[in-house]
Length: 438
Ligand code: HSE
Image (tube, rainbow, N blue to C red):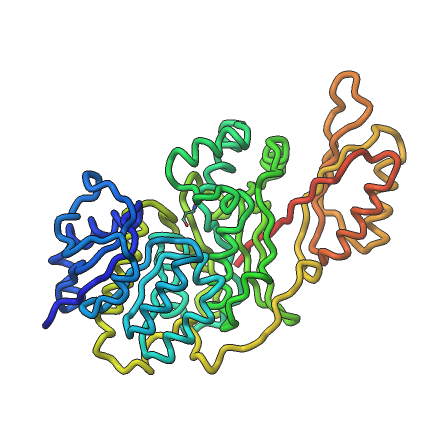
């Protein structure tokens, strides 16, 4: 059979890794795909020739990405430039030219996926994006194919390695946020704009994709609630540990009777859960299906070779599908395009979770009763309370409370009333809590 010709956009970390994997494992990949796969044409503005093993196997290298997507020889375009533009224009042009596309670009899929998949559908081509979520973990394959029998109930994932690394270092070494962030950037995991990692935007891109695949809804990044980890203090990490919890930056999507929850925020989870023990830059995604129960997928969520592993797996999938009926391929969003529903995504006010609260209160009789009274009036049930010793000379003490599940709007109301008490100083720290039990 004729070889498959790749047009590769980007020779950075993941592009370089993809060249290495495609050349190093060429014979084995060909045995799987049924034909040779070769990089006919690549585009990069700048790249380090010395650092990319296998680069000599590339047919032609240019700095013009549009020349690659317009090259009639190219069957599959691999987009590894990242960002919204010109990635969107390049992908749409490749589709228009009748080429299949493989991308690792989570921002592109989360924001422009609906448009891109519609165009691909129209042209009978495939846009594959396994590497866009959790790097090397085949979570898209698992959701679209392996779990296709299930009614998915919820997904909770550690889907940003940089954030997980920061939280792990804060917990294990008591280090400061800023200090650890600088190190994560030096390790090469962080996004070009590190606020994407620490403010949860990168995780929200990935969660948006997971939610659509799980529940058959359009991609709706703008409706995904996003809260970062930049306000997590070492004392909250330590108090959580005393109470038997770990703080993880989770992406959570859940189906409820009222609609679908889509939220990224720091979350207290019981330390005995497997996912609570996923540390450092590693990613993990926990999926609860009604038939299979909970399943956990763990691995490297970033890095050259792990991400290339997902990119090349997509290339093999597309190569195998080149000769199949375009209307009978695995649907982009797991459900048939005419079966995508408009189930609403719930605003955060409507979401129900348990809470960890830390407030600073005057150490005086009756203060606790006043706080508990407000929570009681708002129908919020307390699961645990802990009061710390006052520091020498201090009049105020930290008070830690865990609540049962309650709607966010109700908790907001209670917190506003408690913050208004004279005996309570400053803002109340609130971190959402999830049991994640099967
Ligand atoms: N910045 C991302 C992370 C890279 O830290 O996980 C992979 O998407």
